[in-house]
Length: 457
Image: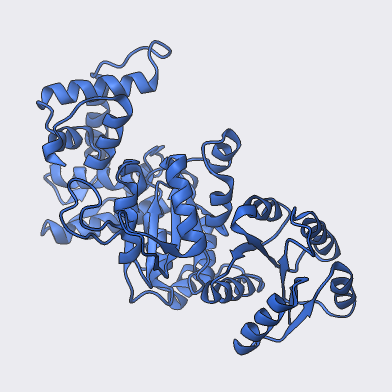
């Protein structure tokens, strides 16, 4: 049974009709007193709670009722209903234990989606089984490993994949956040629809709206044709927003509105478009710290992290290193037509001892470099050591300033200036030499006020 708590009989009636049509058993309450009369005799599966009662608009009564409900039974999920202008109240409510919030006027499809997602997530979780059992239930073909930490993560994403719950994937660089996002999509009801990847760290603030929401012809000087944005490309599918911690505050506001209202306007257009997407975000930054520092919006943080998946560093699951190494070698034997290629047992044990600060990405690069440079098909410790030490030796010969003598930002500025001079301001070549995308370079050029050849854009 679902319980609707709202003093406005018109809203209660509207929600009652909508939810009954969707097959839910529903009851309504018009006041805190009536709410607790119902809670004395029945425990609802979920409560829809309006934050304002009568003419009072501060949300104080709604917050007090939320606290009373959570004190009475903390296990009952609560979805808050609020206006866009009081969205900060909903964020406070999330801190008090609310599961989600919707703004008036709500979209029926999104509200039903949120209710079904939360009810699904409220079901007791099963203990993660063996890797073989998980592979029988889900499609995890591209994720390698048997560590208990990884199995717990696979169990979690297997359970949340069929829902439309927003997922936030955190972890160090190179831990496989994109693979986890793809696995969520492939195990969802949207798997036959698009999976659109967006690297937010590589999009400057000036290009943000055009990239994500598209633009119409004439929206700006170089807009010679209409362009579809990433959100529209992902319609009915999944959008993966990588490096979300890199967004500036103004872009965060624009993103929040789309996630909340499920509508957007292409740059230069006054017509709103509706979009149906499942949102998965990823970052290697600590968003909670960023919220405390005021560099990441709290309301956006609560909108994207209904489910948070933290990926362990590879050094935290060393037993998976041999499995990953063998997996990479098997792929490379096909790519390079070396069917006899194999990593020796001693080398596999030795690889487990490496710190691998770059995680899976570093291990993959080490294995591929060794395969390319080793003449024999049975790779031993010496083969890997030569390539590992070669990389370290090359980097150690480069001049690095003493710690404390220069800031990281100053080093970044100097390196970009030197690269621009070396490549005669050719942005494409500079970006390649620095190992970043052109969009990421444009963002830094804009940040430091460095002029560049605009004809390459």
